Image 1 (cartoon, rainbow, N blue to C red):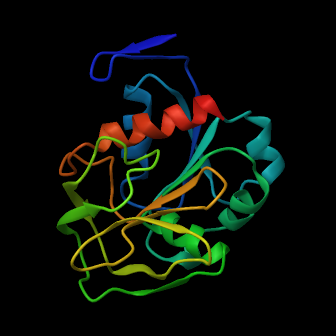
Image 2: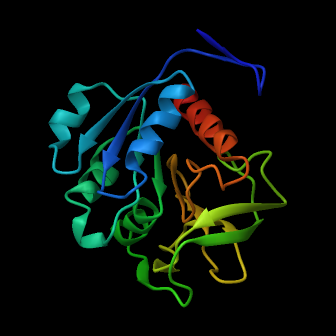
Length: 199
């Protein structure tokens, strides 16, 4: 069991797998999760579902990446593995595409500070709103949510900054909670771990 000073939360050590989509911050996600006292491992996005399940994960984090074409077989994990999933940037877009949403180029390309408006705190954004500053790239973004999905956050440059599946613990955020430029990034991860623990 681990006690987290920031939140006062007592939680068992979870196994969180970070799916490598070749984003520049994948190893930083892994380090952040490890520094929050979780058992974590980076795994290839070409690993089979059986290989992923053999690790007995409590949750999956789909990392960012350069293009949806580099996402390997990540959509199979989303469809077939019944654990909580957090998609970050490309991972967020992959979740949308897997469930029938649309992804396209954003009007505001590279990385920048973005002010996020939290529409629905839900599970992963609890305690983060009503507004927060994050580090995000909008070279590509979710342009249409999958049918039934719940919008969690927006900004003045992107309408779908965060979303969740209507019934499953599957969440996507366009921004990078693992980088120092993002406010309350650790809180987002801790909220996700709570979902994993309760699943």
